[in-house]
Image (tube, one colour):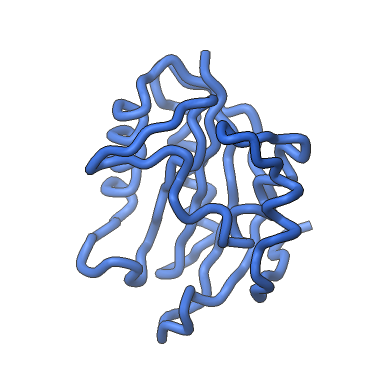
Length: 160
């Protein structure tokens, strides 16, 4: 089994309810076990886009699915919960990003591991830190170092 981290985000509809449904669906994936999930965080859209605030979280999984098979399963969950892809970084009912897949480093048309933007996103790093404070990325960078270097961004806790 490979340990993976999934970023969850929603800014259309009821974000906390959508993330709860997505987490429940993650528990039903074949050859996969949900280990833990972070708390819920609110954040404004990136780059000041005119959109509603996001609800974000990170989930830890163990799986024997390949990275691309896991990506396919995540996209199926997005579709089942109403995701439509109209514009890059547009509003969405659900976004599931494969952040890390064990120590895998990969770059293809469909998938980049580790996730290409995670080091600059507090809404990923802070929930990830909740789950794995001692995490070291495949390139040797420590999560604590990424957090210290992350640009300041508004982020607020939605649950306790």
